[in-house]
Image 1 (tube, one colour):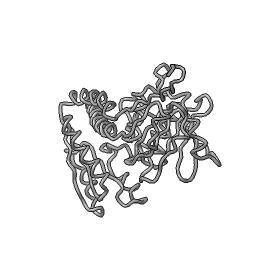
Image 2 (cartoon, helix red, strand yellow):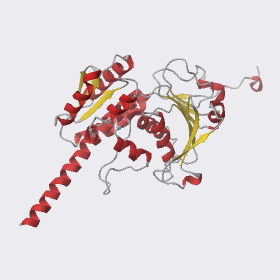
Image 3 (cartoon, rainbow, N blue to C red):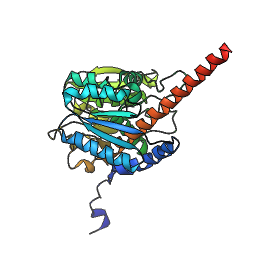
Length: 332
């Protein structure tokens, strides 16, 4: 058969596994840990029978112990969870706390997220952290000595996008997604909405999709605003926003949802953060990069947040000691 008659090879899709991304990030975490001079203790509370939560706890345990961190899982009845978290807040030997949700599966879970002391909230779900996230404020203090924490799963997605060079390193920090269009299929308060806000705050045009419709997250035309704004896209659906998107990120729980491959833009970057496969089996026929799962990166972000909690606490203690010295010197 003549060369001209040969059928063209399909576009090559690069499948990127979370472990490859996590490897470099673990090196950064290990370097930070070596400077602490201690092995921080993370306590995980398991108060449900969700297999995914149990698997997440097992992954956390293994990753902690392999990388010099201490981990302790505490299984409690959901009615006793609040009291146990409050006790851990007061325990100086506990450096970080994670609660494996869902617990009640309703607004009571949102209340429980605020029970964990902000100085031990390794998940970054406390109101103070969420407020900083939505207002695009990256530090906790005016001196910019204490970095704010971000929720682990959204942060893991950002780190993966950086690894994939979706972020444009030529642009100023904070604007490096300018020109990118991204669809996020999930608008949960713990993952989807914070993720959309983070991506928009970094300059992207984000289409946030859930069962109620589509919202657009942007920093305005020419990313002139300091933080994102949200606009309802009446009448829009997946068939409208997915073909416009350079990146499609899915995190729909359950095995019934599959994003139609036919909607994807040729060469799109596709990332799945659901425990189920949200993309159809032929996604690699259209995508240029496909990330089938992000769990290993999420766990590393958990360690990174734990490390940051300890670092922030040391800055706070140093500030208090300095303030005390200043007071004492003034009395002399």
